[in-house]
Length: 284
Image (cartoon, rainbow, N blue to C red):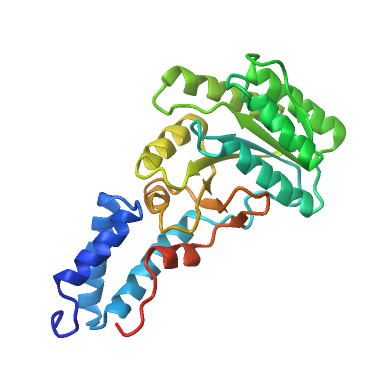
């Protein structure tokens, strides 16, 4: 039946290659294809595009089950968002994009420069704050990031700010002592939050590959991440690691950064994302 319908080994090899190249990862790819083979046989599917549709539906379901970015930051109460991730993932630029989006919705924004160790990090956030017209709470370079978070929350309460975005130092997820320090910042924010809704957003480089899963596991274990900001997704079919993150950790993808501009931000769309990984083909 599979041969008559054109579902020979070459077809499955092509699907496997597409998923691996999209950074879905070997274990998740194998699980998806095993499920697709069984489902296709059970439903007696003969067309390749029918099977692709089935696989796309399965992938979308995995991503949707983890959650949506539509309500990531509540509108009915002030919020504080702790942005975490490794060095070079695009964290500070992602903060600027979220701040810009909030301002367009009429919200006031405060930025907290709690990345006190990376050279130029405070200046970078201040530059974004000046460009956005948003206040920035910062201490001297090398200072205590927890103290920055404390002062930012106090300032936000005094000024009736709608959204606080806390920049944190990039952490190598394999460095235990650095992750412990990040936990302290998380604790300061939690103690000072009061009526503020709290969110922890993990910023992942869309081209990081399977290391992104290791990052997600480590940061979620340390500071209980709530969602993912998939940065640097420039239109290439990459970032498939989020399927494993959503499936294994139940961690939803909330936002996508598609460029360097402030407007290059979108709420994550599982259908569009999966369509990019497995494009539709005519005549199959």
